[in-house]
Image (cartoon, rainbow, N blue to C red; front, side, top):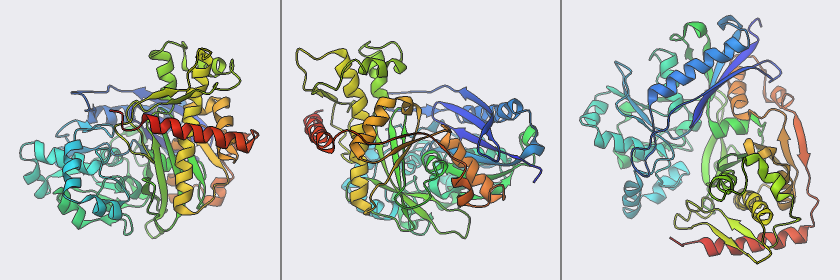
Length: 498
């Protein structure tokens, strides 16, 4: 094959990135550009859809230029994106009708509460695997159709197009020729039937959303269309799409049931591959589509849990308390103490995520004495990230019956060796940190490459990853169990506070 590279477009919440990968999964060129965040009122978060597109376009061209390539060198493009962010635009002109409503936005909380009072949450939970929460796209789309004058009538006439970020980018890249989404992003809308992988008419009626506004649901690995609007990329097929967390799961090589990855960023996103049957959680976790590798392939599923405050607790030590100057200083400060000195920090600054889902929880520090130092607080902060992730994994294993054999990790906080070691000690399994840190973009590249024959199959992909370091448990099991029990006592003291 003369085309020797794959371009991955990684469109995130605060920036857009593009990375060129070669056949061995190595980065050969990259570009990144931040864009403006808009906060019109408390609880509302918006993006300008044009910023999303323009930064994606520029970084795509920048990465190709850095690698000293042209479109003739690219076999395919893959897309991965911030999930749940919701856009609505005019099919004829391509102009957005409103700013994009970001996944963090809480403006539909009252709508979700009303739907719960109407007894609809069991229906959504059973059909979609999700909770009725403003996090997801469906209520955001309902809000737009209700609030923009004439939008609902125009949507019913087929004049408007809805999409998450993947759909918006695919529309722009193909000059409006393709209005489609992939099944992983579709599974985050509250509108997709998990078992059929298609839009669900009963859910559409419950949210008053016309089918005419929706994109076609397609697999994660197939040719969707060719790029027509970016001269430097003209003719290259877009052949892989996945939401960012599913892309990271794929990029980490978690191809079999029982394999899990945890992304340690501002929050933590933990996904466990559960196979070809959706597992309905008994512990308030989300059931989501992992991927479908081709139009005729079976759906594969995952359980997902989110930690609201992961690496952000270190930012709080820096910005809120002034204990460190840079986030990277936290490991050295924590190393001054042999342990946390009996201190536990529960970073429920905006409530607790899975498995608790307690919006009224608030942050708590327990176990303070006159002997407590900044080093003890730093260690307790680091350990809180691992404790929260361990709670998620315990719930996941109880739900699906798969015993965890290892945890694959990515994200900025994984550079902290102390955190990774403590995580391994808690879980009693190896924690694997990959050589390639850009696993989200790599997952999108893998999906695109499979669709065009750049790589043969998952077995070939498994050989491309490589582990930079493996952390193995060495702390006594009994001591870790005692710490975990104390952590859970601290969590209970933080709950229902507001």
